Image: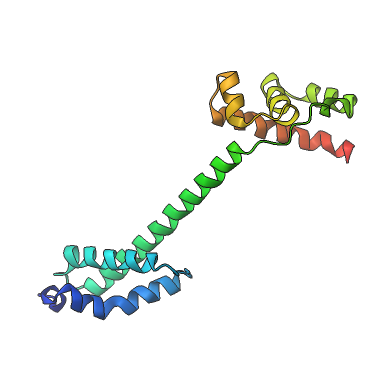
Length: 166
């Protein structure tokens, strides 16, 4: 069984399927002001034509291939966005306030009693001294993820004792 689309040039295939690319972009509720999703759809259509152009189910395969590529592009952009936000967070340093311990010594002693040594190091160096997570990791010879873990554990423990200070 021969597929008539395998005999067509890519220009003819493009003309026939460009509305379907726009439909998939619309169906995924994407804004495409710079036509990057549309371009990705054209590339996916070309790849589908090269790979499945002879197949009688080409329209279905092309639709699946294009939709998958658009979703991959969404995921890729999301990963890039998340990485940029994380890098910005790591570089961001809190306002340094050397006198923060003197505001309520009882509070800080209560905090210290409830935390492990690593969690206290995080609180002291990140909140009190104003170091970045990256600096703390270097000073403590630990990974950035480990330091973040100390902070998360400290925040969980502090939620319960903070109810007394609200």
